[in-house]
Image (cartoon, rainbow, N blue to C red; front, side, top):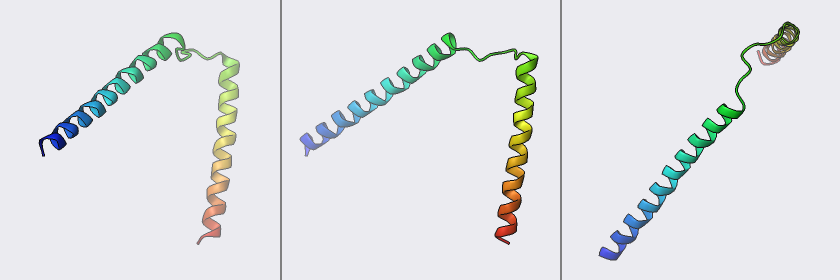
Length: 74
């Protein structure tokens, strides 16, 4: 019985250490990505126009898809 408990405690400890190392490594990678690849803060006017045009076409496509789905499955 005691060897079973020892194996259980060892296994749980190994899993805990692995998960802790995983969390630490993910946090380190996240900070490295944010440091070396920051989000662009300012968009040029041309990029803003392209984005708004693509957003409008995306909204139109989603609206058409929802309308077709609703009319098909009434």
